[in-house]
Image (tube, rainbow over all chains, first blue to last red; front, side, top):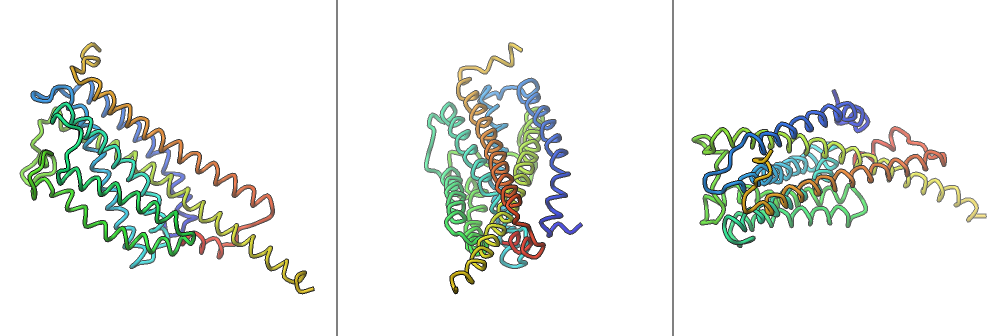
Length: 249
Length: 64
């Protein structure tokens, strides 16, 4: 199926969305049940470990969303894919929201565990930089009226900002940070007990499905916005063209 | 159920995280739905005014 065609994409995504939304609700129901009724309290952190089931998926999605935007940026600049910029622009506010959640839940987890809401260590600071990048990109798209020019400028900035992704990922290995090192995505396997790992993975699946639902909804809106702009420009030029002969007279 | 409600001495932090997450996700959905409603209303108004999409013009607009 040629999804590069926006009309076909609208039709396909319209049929896919209810299924994705249903799967998302089921995954959240399972994930929240496991979080509150199956997963035990951590032997050191107590019940605050329940914050992890929100914080970690939000942080993963904050990075995944930016990775999708970076791939979309390549799609805009290299392959000139018709939906690449639509995808990137639609993803930015959602990525900003997940980064915000990652920062806030991390801060609220940090206060009882570390004794502080915030420290300027490498992991926290690099995630804050990611949040600022999202806001900057959203501002750039809104500042420039022509979506093609805005898309190209945003694609360049997105690719420049992608350097921050490995910095976030490896910050806990490269520098001494208050933040704990990776405990799920490790070469020697997860360091978390299965009774906590499975609820975490289920919540991560639910958040990923949530992102897909919202991204598709936002992409559909963006296509409608561009369709509307084209119609408005067409109507305006038709008005100018019809006014010209009268002006000449 | 008692175990569910017993979130220990840091219950406020845990509940705040869940409340903020729920509010943020709900806010995103409200924004997406309101955006769609406003866009479809504007498109419907233009079409009611007789402005129609030509396939060529439409695809060039969507490419932007």
